[in-house]
Image (tube, rainbow, N blue to C red):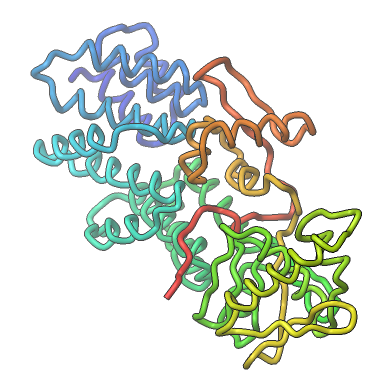
Length: 406
């Protein structure tokens, strides 16, 4: 490797893409193409970066397996940055093993963290935690340790463990400063904002207020009966009743929780659950059926008593009933939650993260675009969607994450 290539590589490692381009911009050999691709990625031109890296990978001879593996890792990083999450984990894992076998432990660790970050984005937290348990970041440089701590913080935030998240972010900030890379420091700062912005609206006893993620953690650990409008569950302590697949029952539970300790008139419940404007006897009969189903679903937590006007929620053991609502109500809030990171997402990646069909996600994106809430660029498979984060708000509770159902 000649001196210009070495100097360009060092410039990229230090977060100086322009310095790297000054050394290799006019060269078209395979190592220079690879470095140019990484530099263009750091400058934000991801499309050009991907083309350069693919060209470089083909330009390396079949015997240069180490260089080819590094190109695979760099291409995967670009796919992650452009939120194209459909890459083959096997290809990345093969590249990681090649790097490790040839003694390139730093890039092997980076490949490991790319897969971790992908699992985090699509909400597969259990797998990510199992991978983290097998990795020791201590021997690696500050940049790698920063990425590692950001993954730990991301998992803790989605698990609603704010103390662990703050500790990991503090370690990430120290490592980023030690690395001296502005982009890493900005990423750590952006991750910390999620803990200092309102995460939900708390509705209790007829009053409503915005709460931080830390407040949500305290609430979920209390003995209050919580109707969670962000993840569509009803819970008390560690007992959780998921209702995401039963929207009518959840709509009834939400209306009853918002009115507690009072009752809710039957006409209001019909409107909330069924959207009925003109009520007849068939609607009233269906309401009785659905109330019976909700009563059975919540049997371990509460009863639903009939009143003269309608129905009221009566918890068995909890002294308080609260409704945890989204900070901003929108029928496509889960899509907005993913787009709120400010990155450009492919619709296929959104579908993968949300566990929904791509057509469903596309309809949501089209609806949001009509109201100006999202924007797109590119054509066909290259189309990407993005939106600026909602000022002063975070949507942590809407991000994909498994529910801790016992």
